[in-house]
Image (cartoon, rainbow, N blue to C red; front, top):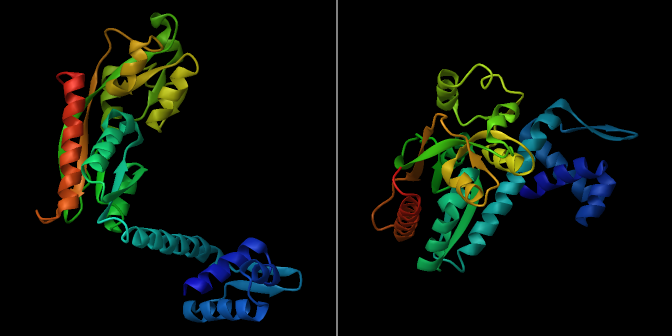
Length: 288
């Protein structure tokens, strides 16, 4: 079916059967047959054939993103399978973007030094994406600010991250004029409403991608709640300043992973490297 899906997507991309056949370097009758076979298997028509070209049917429009995803999934699977010729295992990691420079990159480097026979795939995303990838068997471990619950998974509290109010304003007292609300999660939103003023709870700007606050504050006057470990190098070089006397929030950092047999050496090597990287982070940061 892969060749049929590719034929379908190529017709959509090129806008005609003739152009799609040329793009795939096959004859037009062969391409037409592939699309017809796909329609027979799906039991609905994908295209309306018209004199001025082809148009997707409503069913075809709905099916298109799934066809593209299926093609990409097969290609990703082929790449993973090829790596099995070189590496003893492939370990797939998902991380919150905010945690990459805090300890995740250090963790991956540790793992690669300890086990050069293990290939690593690293991606970033929110917990809901991690949960979907876990359910599809596409990742082995996720590091997030929320635990992920699913059959066969275990979530471990790694440490508590302090979230502090910082500003890039020249005068720290001007922080309120440039306050940006960074939405960590619903629990943070509730605590924020309780502890901060009505003005801070009705900001001109809201950011949902946490690392965007860092970028925004470093390119102009801005204030907002940032993970202390993320803010630390910019506090040290003076590009950010901490706003004194403001509430400090705590956000737990979790690692969620599959429960595997103790003799799964790749899984255990990844876990040991993770704990070592977290301990190094804790030692450099001091007490939580």
